[in-house]
Image (cartoon, rainbow, N blue to C red; front, side, top):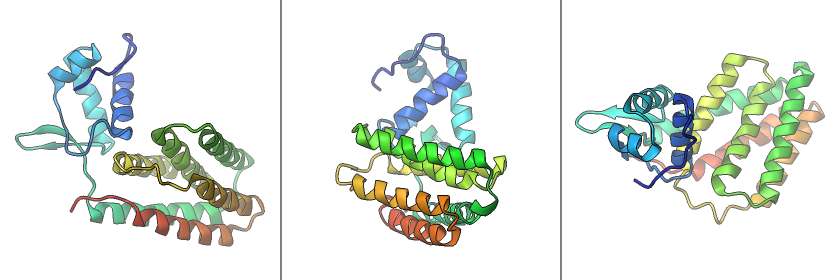
Length: 216
């Protein structure tokens, strides 16, 4: 495994984030085995720190333990992806429909997420960064419900999506069109047209799901 740059004063959280970044970038692909000793040497930390970080990522659903293989990067099946998008549809459409009673702070968070997404696209950021900003915008839609628990669920779902698309070639993505679609959805939400925004979100999610990779 190639050396991973990490702050020497790193905590377990920093190690976990470094490994997340590698998975989201597609460097650590689905099915890859993660060995404590090699990771500790690559990261320049103790094995106990790596062990705790792997436990954190396993709890998040990014890693799984397999007999005779130890900890491996999770590979999402077609059924799992179907379930993720069912959950996303329920949460995000509910968020759009909640605009009439959404808190001003949550609406501001949504607008900031949209602005950040457009900025990273305009800057020509790497695919992992664009995907992160894109999905953060979707989490912000769920945020209109004003529920920390639902927000946490949305973040977990988006983390799984990021893992699934990490190795997909995104060079052919029509980012300008995607930016316009999201801008339209957010504009409808700002205009308190929740039902119409929810309808467009549903169409967007159906289109996105069609391009998701999966392992049977």
